[in-house]
Image 1 (cartoon, rainbow, N blue to C red):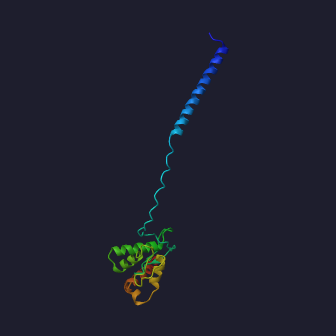
Image 2: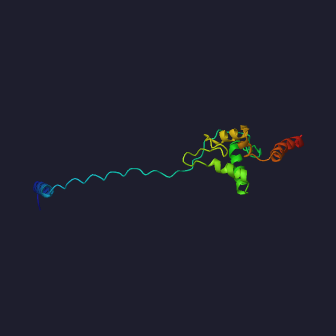
Length: 174
């Protein structure tokens, strides 16, 4: 049997030996780290190539909100039933559907709405002026009275029928 003092001395001795062993291992690791030659710094990344020009993209035009609008070709009125729908969007859909039905005048206007994909601005099919949005183009087409712009509109009978049809429906509702 060992006395408590001997046990205490024995524990202290083991702690010293363990601390010395840890110290030796730490020194060995430091020596290994010091012996390794320093790696050269990594080369700098290659310079970036100059940006390539992006192909033109179609961008949605910012058209102001309009509650009632009419087609500049055939004077068909559009008044959306929902409050969050723009009447210019409805007229644009009308123009594209008529263009799909092989209506030449509406097809020309549909092409003019997408004439300049680089800037996304619509152009007048008669005089090639560019506009900031579809509302300005439609207002220009409706207000122009020269022969070139008159040729881009439907015949007078169609315009009269579309205009009178809206009034006739209002009269019938009374």
